[in-house]
Length: 354
Image 1: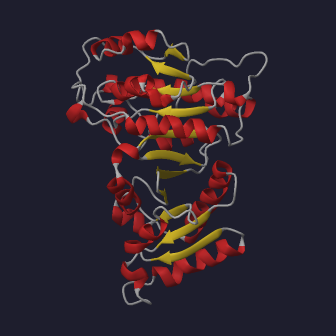
Image 2 (image 1 turned 60 degrees about the vertical axis):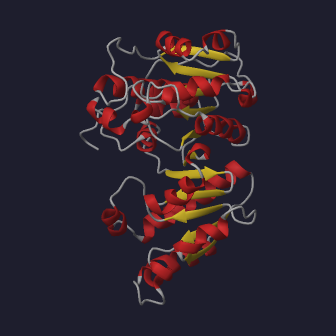
């Protein structure tokens, strides 16, 4: 991405001289695009009884966020919560219009993500939760990343990462994310697919504390029907599965995409389905309920989660946005960061500055 401004080091919270236990450190949360529903659902999630007093540091514009909290009737509860800290990483313009993309909104969202991610990389926080940002606004602000996932990958030295969507009864790992369907199919190759399988295997091993059981979704109807509906399963997918199995990865497939998710749903013997393109993996998750899905980035040296929805400009500022997905993301970040060993300190700091 040669035309993309390189993320700069954002204000950070330095680790204490004596490192706290991992479970004592807070979770970093970026406020998202101020013109969308991110700030609203963040404030509501922090006030939810289901939060279970998870310690958090919110990166954004504290004064602006408190004014939003006042309008929602949440200001007093937030001010009296000692488990929440507020760090100023941006200034939301007083004239910022809600419910539409703008360069100012995109800049605030990016600044908040950079500051929050920096705190995790430096070891002050143990996980990252990101409220939704607008890709259009991000591009208007001069950052031509397709989304959070690619930005965070660049921030830690362009590590290969994959997006995983988690529901209470199903996980899907996306082989490709923000590509057109034609480009996603054209980009299918053995090297990249093997990379996806290894990332899923290694990352889920850390998150779950055991070897994960995976299923690979086929590309063509009926898994190609022995070549009648396409040969990708015969020539590409099956050989990759065989090679992965030889490397010790527990995976089956390719399996017809119209039934593989049903096999994995609420099945304790299956940990995730590998989907070959964006909609193949997201449709079943969102069908189960957008309010309950969590986006988890696999391959980063820390836990990062987010809600499984966007800025929802159509309802921004109306006070009706539901916080369930962001709350689920916060609880997932808390749960997984207690289990996963991750890197921080000098290596992480140099990745931010590179």
